[in-house]
Length: 433
Figure: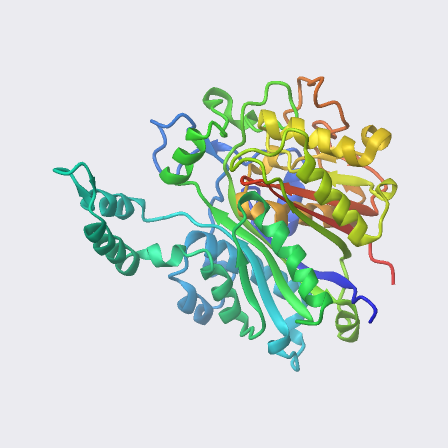
């Protein structure tokens, strides 16, 4: 049986630079930064006091009153997901297909976690502590934790809830999955959704990711890992992937959603095809929980697997959307991995990291970065890596520094390398019938 071809027919995102495709894309090409002092909670006592927040977001602007009524209890990340999915669904014009078989449409997300109701979460932990014994009272902990989960919004923080909300919104009765592989989650979700369509499990998949970890627990965790930038005195330029003075990533939030569709299904309904998804690679470093392997072996394997799956030689890649977090280790090792795959041509392939502007959207990062690849193909322009002022001799590739660049862009490779050693890569190409 011949392999079914997969195309993208709709996109939507909610980002720190805008709540629609064109506004955020204009901001990215303009080198704008979404980074500022954290306002979601008081971070004045934290080592990192800034983040990349989604500002002025109102779900009611995206849903009908009836839809909003049904989804108003959704968590912050699920609200972002609903808005981005509605945007993608409408842009694909699937709603106009009145005979759409909803059992042949599925959802595959990379959705995150993180308690919005942090005060009650802490209260549950305090109430569960047995001070006389100096340890957690497991029975009491279970009681207060269950109360916290059932009587507050904590239940909405379950990672699968965003996928459930989207399925309900569009009456999607097909496969429904969520993966939580940290920073690689939405790239992995898109790759797995593509494979589901390939093998005939669905004709259409809504896929992407959402996340919001800008809360005390999320910031504390990443600060303890020394993964976040602490450039509090110059936060707007704190995200500086591949720059010699980089000191960590900037925590962001948002959602990115794409409509993946089997080619003949899309053509039969006259859909506008944005590009084709050709290949997917997924590997594990099997090294350390927080670190990628020093030789970049997982990233190398992931990129090679995606290229092989796409049947595309490395010589045909016109642009790489880097994971590019701005941590010392990630940028150095990703550069090494790219050299391992592209060899002598590595210095001729333009690479950039939009995390320099958006911050790191964690589970949503890969999907939003893939959308920038689609837009780069559409507009024949490469997004820049801003705040690149101090070249690092270890990171010596073409990172499209500080300014967008007009270029011939036909085929793109997008990387997502996560905590836990999860590596995922996608290859997309300009659609040719």
